[in-house]
Length: 289
Image 1 (cartoon, one colour):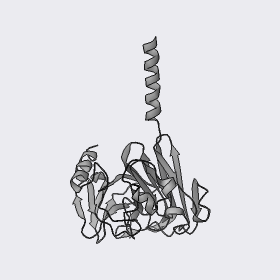
Image 2: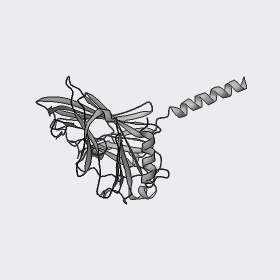
Image 3: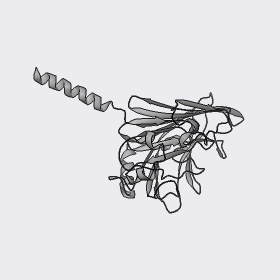
Image 4: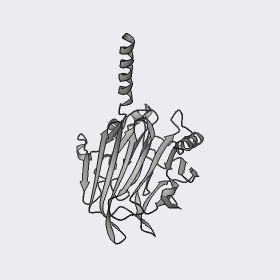
């Protein structure tokens, strides 16, 4: 009987550990930063300068991500040096003392690119931003062992019609990579654009099912500059072409109503994935699944 009770206790302990949600969300207006929100909307489609960290944000123990609430639709990275949740306290921009104490920072530079896995459209000749719009809505959700952020852009002009595009980014407890999904909420198929940016001097590994960048970003909001790895993993069967621009690689999807990809990052301050070679080995392993 005592053995049976012990087994039951261990089983319940295991369930408790497994079901712990090591993710979090963040969405708030700068003017009232004490009030966290689940959803915000704008008919202009641009709340970049009004929202904390410029849009909705999510994290797990390894990484943080934010989606810009403007026409770029870019996805940015918050890099960490040790496992743990930091977003609610650091609010994307940790203090100098926090960074000296081992907190993460914003080492990634997006600019006007898609960042890492951001979504736009392709009209057959050129990239179409999710703009102008009739309404843009961002929201964040934390449930189970995941968190996700969404951006719904309504009334985007596309090929002589208007379409609604939903972009969702999901982080998982215990899994470093995040999932990016895009949905065309329309009766007609569209061609999506996604990609990954890069900067001069960075190492790039461009394979059929992933693109890796590694090196310094010209960012100036962090205490120091460190080398950063980023990768976009995808199913090559979902895409028609790959375009190299001066600051980003873009993937153009086949006509569809939905695509997905995975994004992942690491940096030189982490204990196990702190070199280009180790990061490539990680991506090679992840791309097999």
